[in-house]
Amino acid sequence: MSRSGRGRFVWLISAGFSLLPASLGAQAQDRVCERGSFSPLVRLVGEWEVRAEDRRTDLTFESSTGRAAISMALDGCGLVERFSGTRQGKPYSTLSVLVLTADGQLELARADSEHGGLTVAFGPLESNVATLIWKRDLGTRILSTRTTYTVESSDSFRVERRLQRSESEEWEVTYRGSYRRASPSPNPSTPNKR
Image (cartoon, rainbow, N blue to C red; front, top):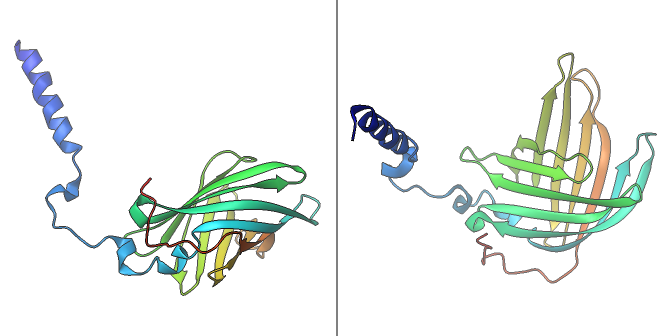
């Protein structure tokens, strides 16, 4: 092997070791979701009938219905929601992933068939209420959404989304969803390992 070939080989090996996780040599720690903080949301696993009110551009609300399937993911450390229904008379679907971060905050990544790209929101879970905030700096103002999940019982929960067009304006309701269980409560202690 030539000198330049050995140099490249050493560089590749060094680069490979630098990609190993920093926690490889660390002691095992409890997984965040096993500490109990995530437990109120485990009740959301199952099939749901959804009744929604979506605000239209003319500031009126349109009622629609749909179905959602919520499953455990990440060895019990996250939830995945797949929603399908209609919005303004057209087919509409969303995909949401909710996880608990190491600092005890929730993180929600969400995409829908109308807007495309992912939005990521963060916030606390307090008792049976999760409030997640997403912000985008538009240069002249900050656009924000606040999504609140309220667990009412093992067979129902609500989702409300509010929009704030700039930090000096009031929060406006843009979406209200009422979820009612469509099938018997599953056993949440059997996580989906996908």
